[in-house]
Length: 213
Image (cartoon, rainbow, N blue to C red; front, side, top):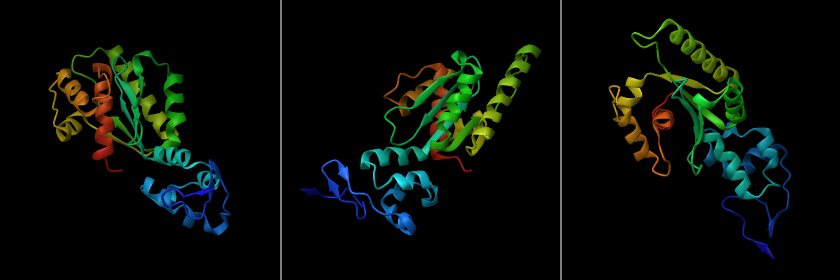
């Protein structure tokens, strides 16, 4: 018995869990119409994904498409920073803590998620007053490496100062990390937020709601 098509699935007949393939040809964008609601721009539907539409179960297509809305954010502190990837359809964000990650870990993390991200946010920071020469140099190398990783990944990215994103999110910390930790916990109640991850999570939320590329 043929079951009803999922919402907007033009022309595909479902026989139980099987899907009768459609011939895409010149019609691929018309047939991809139901998936465009998952994108900011229908042109982001790449040919590989479009070619998979007729033969892939709806829930798998939706999962692939929805990841195009992911945002990647980076709090660049080498001892307390993190990278976060999140999208509206992810149950929980993915988090990589920088104090336990190697350069290869960081590069692999960004590279493996680049095709799913519409935007990256990097906190724009500078050397702190009275910071030693060695620490300043080490931080500069780390920060430059993160910028290069983003540039190489092809993800459009913006840099934002702590003062700007904290002001827009209503959590000016003035150096008190408990302020940003509490705000992050409020926005992400499903997580156990710690100081190491709070700023990266907030940067991600800022990117999803305020960033303009």
